[in-house]
Image 1 (cartoon, rainbow, N blue to C red):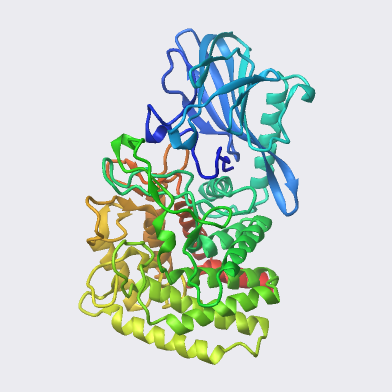
Image 2 (tube, one colour):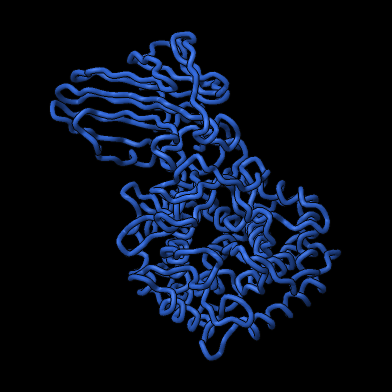
Length: 589
């Protein structure tokens, strides 16, 4: 679950971005600098095993959750629990709780309250079974634990209705109950999925990661829970990803429904459509918003040195001010899938969506900033044109599905067909045998691997297979790894391989009928996850993870690729977007 910060958007534990100024919450066992870690099965409870010189211990770290209601199956208890239990011998445990509000700009002040500690002016409380003392802006404690003994530190944040205070019973037992309830809640949620097909373990784990990245209050999905983890070590490509991008909409919705989490899908769709309803007539949809539906301006934090001295550290994201017409395609694709699955779109929601389709019917000839948010002049990016086509196409399909004879379908169809012809004429380079980044360019773009996935052209169309092969040749950096583009984007340095595009290649290969290649590539990509099964945004050949972490759209693309592979392995005749085929089957049969 996403931890609500002291002030909205402000980090209090940002040691990743500055080991001196960032703030820290650490538990360490003397003589064991690096524990062995894993997630307990089908949960987001992190288990750490410590082997010290005089004993061994096991720890659990987790954000406490409990069962909710049918519309919100999991509820955050606004409590971070860290617990260590000695299994053999003795261990010496050290605890340090040192939040620094304002993204590390301020030191915390502590007051003793009701047997615990409360930070002044910041909604953080600490309770601990070992004695803590104030040391400057930190709470510190050390204790020697013998076999069978435990130590627990509880960090509460925000409105702590589930806070296990003295009246909640024995403090020794409360952490055990919190652990049991949290594990049971996650396992019950994960167990709703009946998916046992190709890559089932990775798919179920990715679904858990996505639920963990979902904001408990609104259902919004964070692209990542971090800011400014660099796309190049020591470089300037450092961005804030603590926002929700609409380009994830259709993928997330279909994945949640396919994996048995329909209520989370409904919550997200309601959030998405509520945000879209805020844009008035003639206003352009922002490509990204905060988890409460608003954005913040981008600024630099000069007091933080950055991860591995990669500066600047940024908060906020200027891309929210860009024109990205692909956003409309993702929104309409999600709405169309939702209506297929549930039939629950309201008349007001449909009228709002019609307004946005009308906007695209009027403006599809205009250039934009593109999916990759290159900070330069607008261009006629081919991916944006394809997704603009998707907006018009799904608008037409929705009108037919809803039986709306009053929608201006003929105008939308005229624009859709003219746009399709233009993309095929101006976006495809016959000499290269590939679609290209933008009209008039010869540069490649890995986002164009989604052309068959969204139904713009069949997967075995020679223009599609040619694009697949040119992208593999021109953007490949190592076996299974692709850059998203190689182009002067106005920034110094270069990126690593873009893992989203690598999984998109799996789906494109499936739809091209090259299932064996797709399966080999998927198996290779599974090996590129971190030790906890988490994927970053990017990776380089030596195994270094780059960019913000974990990355939602990498996990979404993994799920999509696995589902596409599973469908085609079960039925070799499958040659279309299998997620939409599944949606149609569920809706009509």
